[in-house]
Image: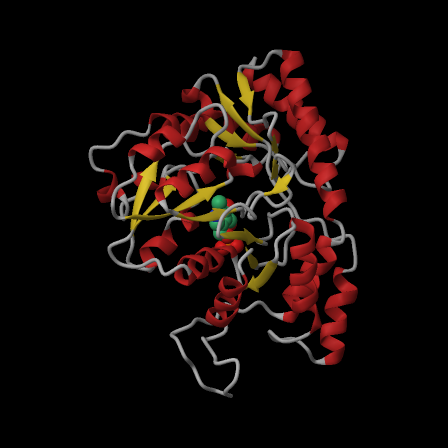
Length: 367
Ligand SMILES: Cc1ncc(COP(=O)(O)O)c(C=O)c1O
């Protein structure tokens, strides 16, 4: 039985709202769905302002640009993350300073982060990886103490909370992605959220070519075209209407994996949450006790059982363009997670039979 690692769940008003865009000719980046999606997204996350953008990568680029990050600035970022958490730092000519991750929760190692703060450190890009959440009490205290700006990369963590508060609302700016494998998708898409009114205005201005709010076709600053279309927003709105159902389905899948793996005593650890965090369970994430088995296990699952899986991200500091930023540094946590870690299929429409198949296949291969 083929089991993909992910597929979107388009069971609501997606078609109806997209047809409305087509029927009314509002297909570009103006139109009611962009505003509605932004409003509903702000309501859902509890953010004061939400600004829709064309993808999650530009969300981070826009956030750092709006905060004035540039050449000479150091930005702390985990090495264990998707490349898009780091590239925007480089786009702006700033220096990424890589931080290790903590093996039990896969998030920023805050002891390592504190050690790497210098006079040039301007900001932190904190990534809530695989739906789990960074320790926001300690991280926000560190940022306050050292006057650091905080951008939260919540691409994988829509719906995740820390002490009941949504991720993205702790830092200066929170960034989300709506790529096809995200909890809420718009095909490609993203959102930035901010609490500060002036910052929100700057985000909206920069995303739309820096156009003057009072003078037609006059541009006050060098901006970008990072706009989301009305069609994307129409899909996003329909998706957001189903977010509770999508999240509940993902949680059931994650809980079943955890229960079954523990019952069977499989040689692996499931990434979970703690007493402060609520993990949205974006993609079921495991770490094998025997890291040497990871790649062959993935190949066996695909070839013998037709089950798709994904390797954990490679540490970004090992990639050719970023090696030079990590000379003399060690990242034992990130490296062990990266090479022993993998994601299992976990999507809202996954059937019980499909999950049973994944569990049985994995148990057979690991016995
Ligand atoms: C942690 C992380 N940051 C940023 C992004 C970038 O988002 P996008 O693919 O929408 O550009 C992604 C996902 O793709 C991600 O997983």
